[in-house]
Length: 140
Image (cartoon, rainbow, N blue to C red; front, side, top):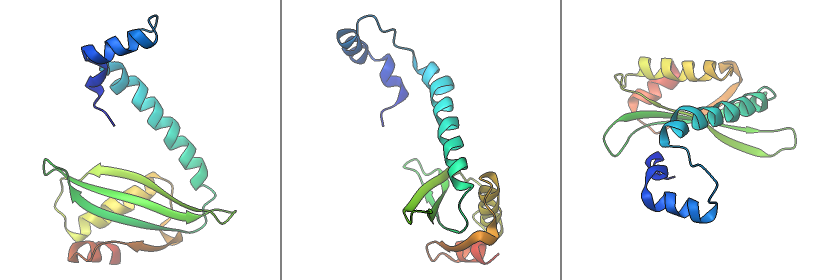
């Protein structure tokens, strides 16, 4: 949960040299352009495989703003596996600068489900706040 620039700070580099002097610490460009995208692809692939066996699921969604007032939409899936274990996975948090009308939110939710290979007819419920726009989106 630290910024990628941490790997370029003198104190952190000195710490790594003390812990393992032969290790060549990559820069933040490596982490942002190579390591994190690889990790994301691996995690997404594992989750996609896990979701293929899900027959029915529920979701929760919310529209929220960052500390810098940038708008985002998150979508989380909830399901019970064959061993009756409950799972909750945040599928995505995406930048959502469009107008927050019911129609646009509905399209965003549909696109999110499709991008994960989830069929809307297998969604048993969706939990949201009580905003008129999100209520309309869910009804659509």
